[in-house]
Image (cartoon, rainbow, N blue to C red; front, side, top):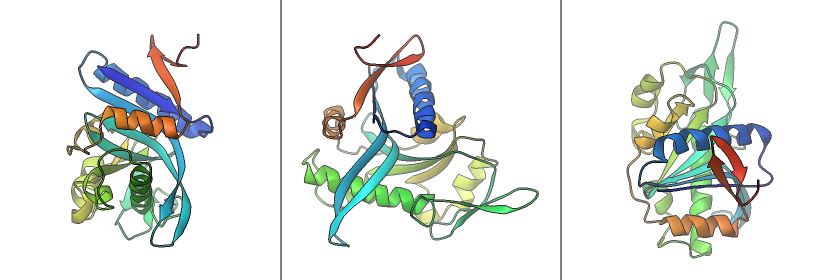
Length: 223
């Protein structure tokens, strides 16, 4: 089994907390198996945007690779009752007093944010000649997306099976920490990328390697 974790030095505190929880969760599931698992945290990079004719900055909170399946994860530090989550809508939550928007960084919603990051990632991989990627359609057909809320989400199955637009249900999911592994485990599509390709990406991005020892995550080769 290969369980590898890489993290940016500049990862935000809240994202780092989620990165650690995900590493521990997945390591606990896969450490005695023969699966190939990579978790990358704080994936910041620039890539050429052909539509705009210039390089743009991208930030992927967490990137997960399991046995050929690649998932872009966008972390949100809240939860609750999601009442609006269309792919072209501003997302909204409800409680007793108000509705609040589910933000998507610089984009209209989390789905749009993840889609932008998927396209940016594919452009980077093609530019660096990492993996056998032919065109931008790779972003739509070979990479999955998951918005991960750190607090519980009500009626999660209903959201993924009914509320999300039919056209994106196979490639995009909403999850929370309790259900996260089940969510990404539902994605099945070989990305044509190898574990070695993910290591090359980590090297190019100057991410630091981490290991899990006795359920503690530590910088590799450091006590």
